[in-house]
Length: 148
Image (cartoon, rainbow, N blue to C red):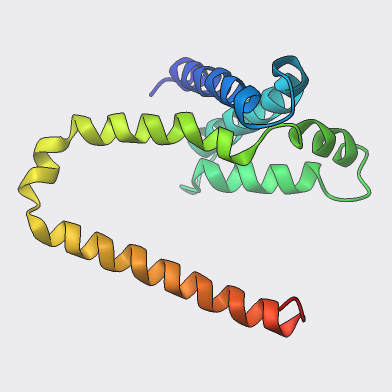
């Protein structure tokens, strides 16, 4: 995928996320634009670095690393970025991304159908195992820190 196409997809997802943000949070459309623009720029930069730098490191690693560095407490960039991004809801970011993933999966529905019932069984076991594992970890940690 060309970088211009990547930027286009990021902008479309950002716009849809802003619309969902208005519906799902107390923040207005224009209030959330600075945070969304930062997230789009960060994602674009990370994807670009993943393509141009040697080593085969995925773009998401650059996104996380740069995001952590820029929001490190004590740096002058931390407070304004955190304030801007706090006006963008996490669930509202997921909405267009999951819709895009659903469309991508539907494109390969024939491959999914050929996988037989075993893939459904394996998926269910993985989902249930992940949920139970997460619940156990949360229980242990919350009990250890005295929250429950």
